[in-house]
Image 1: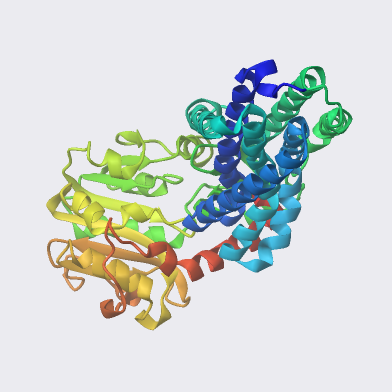
Image 2 (image 1 turned 180 degrees about the vertical axis):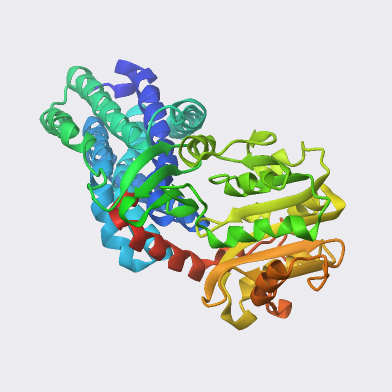
Length: 514
């Protein structure tokens, strides 16, 4: 009579196995967004897709793993080997899958691409738990304790994997390299488990298939490691590339058009001419007019530094500008490739935290984080705007740039922005960067005092420019955005789709595939 596997081996090797595979699950889930985000953006929809796919895959894995465990004495090594091979080829498949799902749009495209890329390996990793429970259970009376122990250890592995990835590994190693390394680690784990199964469980049924998968995975490594690189294109050149915690930062030159772009994932946050370095983003021209609205302006805060053009423009008017940028890679690129020279403090961090540390007061605060990419919804709520208001002088101005459609002043998103600002500031005026285009940058100027554009002290050229771009927003179409409830991403779906298509048309889809 054969003794139960747990009596022969103990449970240590099983605990190590489920610990490591539990960590692998979270690594795949977290890193999945870094492969998808450059193409579809790091929006709520991408995160929702990845979490949903992870849960679906694990549910299927739990079920199929239980069925397999009831029918076979061994096979854990084969399961892990399949998971390893499926993981190592994820970077290889990313480009073709993203291109194939592109016509499906932002929400469905991100979900389907996530389902195709990550569910196979996650299903296999989900199968490990039930199989380990079967191997660890000596008697029916101990099945509860065995099951609880296995899934507890797996969960601890997931926690450790999450912390190790986020705090230590990802800041220094690229996402593609981590995926490939994880796949190889799973293949090596499969070899160890196969050895245990062969020597102690006296089962060699899965040894040869496992070894074959390991050989295939290792053999594919050179090709996978060099796959999915952006195709060479004479129309543009990549001058800088850095994968940060917050996105894929790139500086892209288009020499024939004399344009240099600063992008994060599929969002452009800076543009300048290559020859002279002058700013090419039309909406930022309003910065040259703001000092005339408040002649005593001396100190400013720029949230969303980007290429730093607005801060450098304010310097020409004798205004010292503190800059606040969440991404250190953006700050580095702005200095190296756009000639940004700080005039005030340079702060790296998330705005909601950092503004609580600032003392103020500021004569001008520019909130320029709502570009065409993902929406940092936590920075456009009543609570966030109230924090900014408290940093302003009595005659201070909050300038907020926002990308959307005009829709003859009936756009619900613009109405929501205006309505939210109205909860904090008694006065506001809205300007459109280009009066001839419906999809546009909109500049909201919010103050505690009324601004008179007819003031004779205001230069005629400035007055004309602003009046030509003054728009009326029907606030009745909007909702007040709060920390508790903000529908900004839902309201901006059409904008996100349109903007993403514009950027892809500008530099091509392959340029946003990891």
